Length: 400
Ligand code: PLP
Image (cartoon, rainbow, N blue to C red; front, side, top):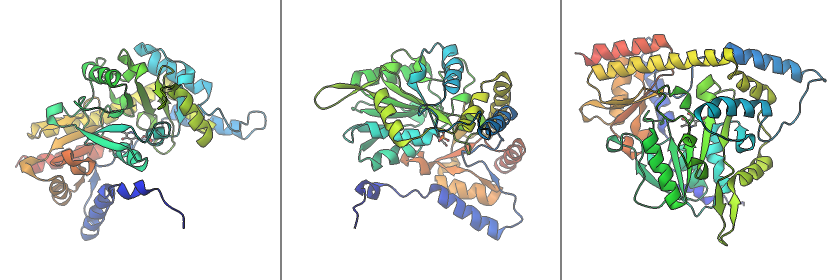
């Protein structure tokens, strides 16, 4: 019989969303009349904007005609999308990158997991606690040692550089689950750490479109020296409703180097190109046309409105929580809100309270790591109507 990858036996079981679904289903079965409102999951609810839909329809037409049909595309993405990304996401923020430093992909989740292919299993990985679980599990699967960085009230709900050595550091800003956003000073401290330790930062900027404060960095490359120590993951998922359509990109600057035990140095960009050209055949042309439409004047305006819609939800939730005396972070420049459970309740006790008394579903913080115990995540991805109703229920209950 075949031998399996033993590292899979070291993975912690992931009960979080299954347990939420189970408790929800049991409650719904016992109370069929209840109107449950979910502020729990990180999936978007607003549809693709008209500019994207139109561009994809046109691309479908092209694919159906012999004169304009396209087969396999470039592994790293079509020029029209690479250029649009460079011109819109980086150049206006003073970041100089070239097309060959950007790789279009089918998701930040897959890329942040697959990037491990180019790194040795001997590297020590630092991840925050609480954390987006992909960073831990993907590295456990690869057999790497994972160490955690507290991402707590004391650290402003963003991880700070540790006094121990890490080779790979997974950072996420705006942070899932805490909603906190790195400022330039905090991020500079990480770039300094990476230079000092010859480490590589894996920077997940999947929620960067929610950053509206011009003083906050949207890209790690806004920090001097980051092109020598950071890989950045970005996504159209939350920016433009592509969670089901799938399009993202990863930046690996040419300046980034890794080494072999014999001391020879190698371009991480070249390794990733080799990896992608071996295991990936590109994002569909139709999808890339849709993604490029996000950058047209109409697309930009439509996407801006969608983000503003979610940010309005976030603001409504945040203001309500603060007015009710909750301690809460996030909800500004971020779709996530991270609140401290009242009266020392555990995350799951608070989950049950919200479900049973208010018919609201959120996500227990303990599901994101030990340091998440006693915290709870709410998201702004619901509809405005549901968000308004949810905060009214919170007010009625907690103002008593
Ligand atoms: N990164 C973070 C922090 C996320 O929370 C998510 C999705 O929830 C992703 C990446 C996934 O992005 P994509 O849809 O591009 O795979």
